[in-house]
Image (tube, rainbow over all chains, first blue to last red; front, side, top):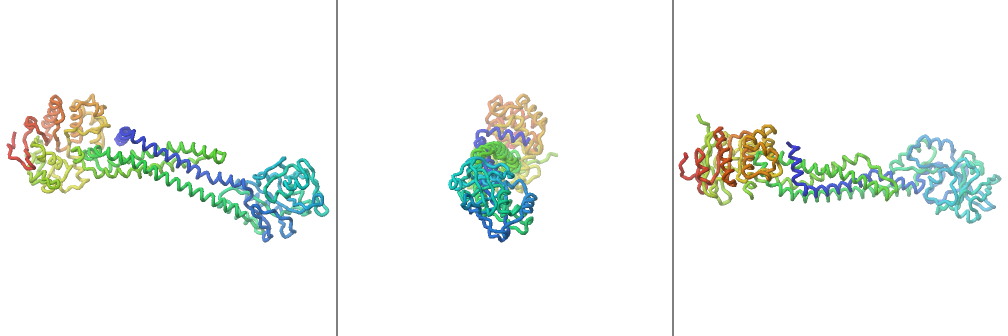
Length: 386
Length: 222
């Protein structure tokens, strides 16, 4: 009988309940979309952050290297700053997870080209597009780290030596020579515009420092906590070396994430309050209409628990239906927002369904506060028609 | 020996400065049909409401089936109404969005558990076997009142309280409802019926006349 009564109650007040349902559904849609974004925002934003380049540096402890995100890379400073390449790279591979977007060793030397000093950076050129995704390139990337004949040059170097792809560049360091062909000219907007980038073996041969590097740059994806955890793992693996964040970038990322989360939480709270107010207004009107029914039910011996239970079930159903519809609509909205803002769809977790539904049932029940006045209805007064 | 079902002693009810009942005392035996009569404002409905547990007296005692109503709290009165009283109102007071069958089952639901078969049988008994799934708005006044009678009887109450049960009916329907009341009386139901009409009051075993909240010196037996 409970289900039968509930169904009849819902049907009897369809127009008025439809207003409350629209409010609950709208609220649930926006909340669901925001929660979808909240759950996926870390992944999306950290992916965006990785476009800013490397955020972790490994170097010899106390080497004096203190690279910031935009600081120029220093030249080779002699053996105290050099690390053995093999153990460092092996440690990176041991701790590597999908969070590590890119990693590349660096060896810097100040060589000469046409008798003019120029900074040569030996690295893995195949990692450059991922490690420095903001660089603009004229020409082509070097796709193999084994390619010892190709290089990338900064735009200032290209201007100084009047070079363009596929021009040749002769590099000299002490009594070592290397001839490389320009594959592309980069525009980094920083010190890199004054440098020549070759694959690591080329720089090692020029400097004659076999299998030695100065630092490793890494781009690690994730929240501040994730990055700190990865750094701690690397620090354990490399006790003689220093694993440092490029502080400006990681702190800015963390703050932005925290603010985004706070903004979403505040918006969800605001929408919950507004939805509850909408339901409250509808329920206040409904409570007035229900006085006669409640008076009669009380006269027939209906306890308040049973009567109010019916009305609360009605409101909960409203919240659940509105929550489920809104949740589905919210997922569509979140996908659309994801495409527009991040250029990739949001993948809403299924946990959002029960969470949003329970939230909306709670909001609907909070909005049903006026129904408690039905407890004060005097059946004798109502039956007299007053 | 006849059992006393209703006992009223020095019952008073005041609404502010207005004294609706002023020291009313009487007793009703089980199986009796009592007509409560009197002009408007004489306290008839107030008396019925107190005996039905819808209202509480200012002073005095009202005992129904050995239950002193003054001693019951809100929940106790609710239980009392569900278990011992069957109401028939002048305005029918059916739930408009429930069918005839569901209106009867609603009383079952508040009493204990519902039994659709029993509710159908009760409606068939009042001649509405073919109107089970009709909403009150689709029934005539007489049919609605018969649904109310079925609802009043479904839980086998000790006492049936009827407040002007034919007040809103045409003559044909009035006769149908009175026929039902006569049948209930013959089945030994105890009925307290408020009415203005002397010819309807004459059908009862006894009349209680109220004037300004007091028992009027009227002949006790009809």
